Amino acid sequence: MKINVSEFLKGGFTFTLLSLQLAFVTPGYSQEVWPLRKCIETALNNNLTIKSSKLNLESAGIDATQARHARYPNLSASSSVFWNFGRTIDPTSNTFTTETFFNNRWGLNTGVTLFNGFAIKNSILQTKENINAAKEDIEQTRNDIALNVSSFYLNALFAKENLAIAKSNLELTRASLNQIQTLVRSGARAPNEALDIEAQFATDEQALLIAENNFTVSKMQLRQLMLTDQDFDVELPGSIALSTDPDIIIFEELYEGALSTQRAVAAGEYRVRSADLGVKIAKGQRLPSLTVGGSLGTNYSNQGIRFAGSEKVTTPLTAYLAGVPYNFLIEQETPLIERAGYAYQVDNNLSYGIGMSLSIPILNNYANTANIEKAKIFSETTRINLETTKQNLKITVQQAHADAKAAKLKLQAAEKTFTAQQAAYDNAGKRFSLGSISSLDLSNARTRLDNARNNLLISKYDHIFRVKILDYYLGKGISL
Image (cartoon, rainbow, N blue to C red; front, side, top):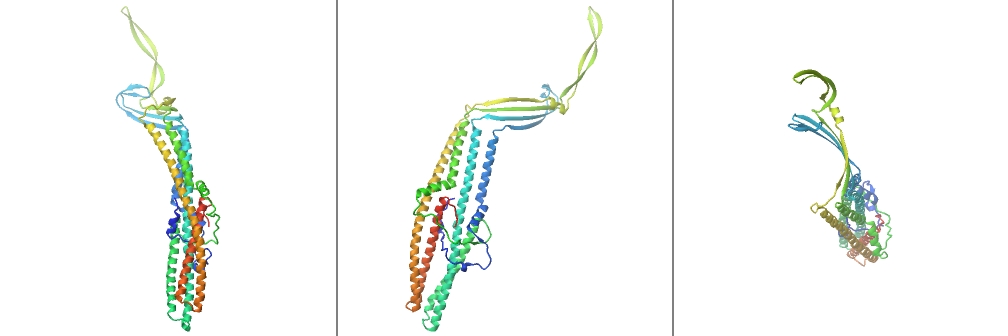
């Protein structure tokens, strides 16, 4: 996710001086104060995009485990049950029978791939690249969320300090109104001179209501970003140190830093390597594949028989020789057959074998070639995506560098303007006390001072935020 700094500023992303006193904005009830670090941690823990990315990482890990196990033998068991009718071969005796019989077969098969065009090896390497890309995606999302939370947190800081200014202005106007009313009662001022101060007092009351609402809305927006319903107050830091000068640092240094710190670039590089491995996997489909396997099986039939021994049988026979009958006895061994039991057949009908299989692709209707060409196109697409990411990053860094330089100049001009308007207002106050100017003139001087102060606050925090953006690209992290 790319943060557009200008959009934050257009949407009211303004800032105020850190040196203002916070006594005016202390809530009437005890409220927990959250520093920026805690807000970022809460947002990272609750963010749904990160949770989804972690699931993608788990899925990539499962793919890697599956790819590694492709090197190991497989093992499967099978069983079948048949009722056979009509003339059928009994698998236990391998003879034809016309009797209806029941048959049960058990089998065990195993096999392992010895070679398949290095597809297993390249698939394992590809899953590693995919895991690394998924990890970088998570880190990029975390960085983007931290930057986003920081911008909303600073917006809440501005709203809080702006509320302090509104309360302070109201108290100052109240004091001026009391002063002019005292002068009117004493006859030193005309009664109509109090009207301008009263109008300013009403304007300041309205500004206070607006400031209170803006502070409430800014905290609500921050909570929505963090996906939490817990109400809290923001913590104003004592000071914000700036270690980067936009006029000193050069663009090349910024861009090189961004290339190394922005995890989207690293994720793109991993995806390019993964796509290159995809091309190798597709090319491997043209190579022969060699597998070795074995099987173990046995059969049972309710028509199965077994040899149960033998018995001697004496058979009388009569032979004729020259018409003269001769009687004699023949004794022979006769086998005894009985139905074979289930355990006996399973044990004695065992069969097993081992063998190798070689598959040589010759012609498969352009399928392998199509897969190779598609893999090449995908590889080129990932390279274009990576280059696009780098180009977009380059443009963003250039804009951020230019914005930081402009913000520094704007701050310097705002400081000069505020100093001049402060001196003018102080002089107007003295002249008003002497009666040389009207309350309207004093009110106009006050308005010009308020505008200058507001511009200074915006310029100062604009400068701070844009310098922090440069620190972000340099890998210095987000902190206040």
